[in-house]
Length: 334
Image 1: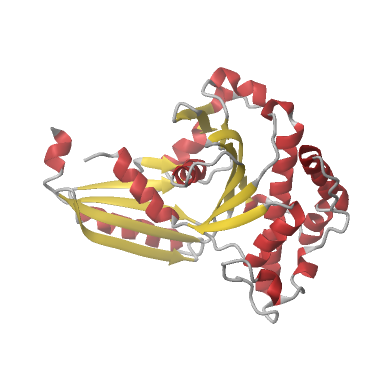
Image 2: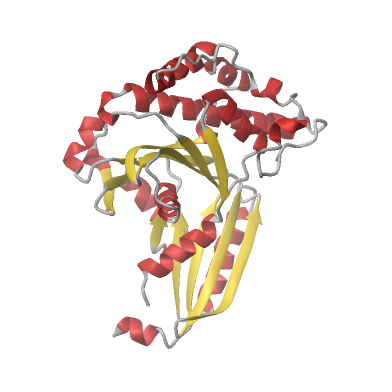
């Protein structure tokens, strides 16, 4: 009865997505089950003076205009992950101590977990404004996977955000392996990142692939991304995606994108090695990589990924704030 009464009033569903230095807000106002208004706002430089206050004041003003407001928050804490089991008692088999974790079972298939205190901090992160639901990028990634045509391939999916990404390996929509990385938490400089991507590491992954395919592929001629960028523009002709690289005169922007791309590639290769080496995952050869992209990864990086890992890669653009809003409507059924 309570929800039926609420349908008579205007209810605001508001999704809040923090990036590295910005905040995106998307909302829809419903009355009698129909959208009567859409709200969108973006705040930049939120870590500067009064930046966060502007976000909170904006949300508080919106709350006053409607009978009920439901807030969904993008959860980007580094403590989260997912495991191909539905039982917390199995977490230790994967090296995860469940003692301080909260977890949910998804589709009776796998578990998403996070530090309990981190979840509490997220719930209280907007001060007096209550956070009703938090959404892991792993859950958002899975929703995108389910929206695709079912496939028997072993696929690596990446849900990219401005300063983090979730990575999952699925076969026939069943989770085999998953992890989450905060890109900005990597404090190594570019030289250290480049050193971590030496030919020995790449050859190791290539040997694993060769074992799966019974082919002798080697990546001893591993290129740096910097060298790769000097290639002919025709290299990117088969990618239906904009090349998101700044002009060469913008050195600071070029270095920032280069560093981020090298960090992400390092994380991906680390995840592949763990998936193939650790017998608990029973790793099969990865047939494709699909990137759900909310941060506009460069086409340069996409082509680089394909060339170095010998795996077809594609990109599907997503709007995280709108996706969270859609899920809120399912989770809070008025």
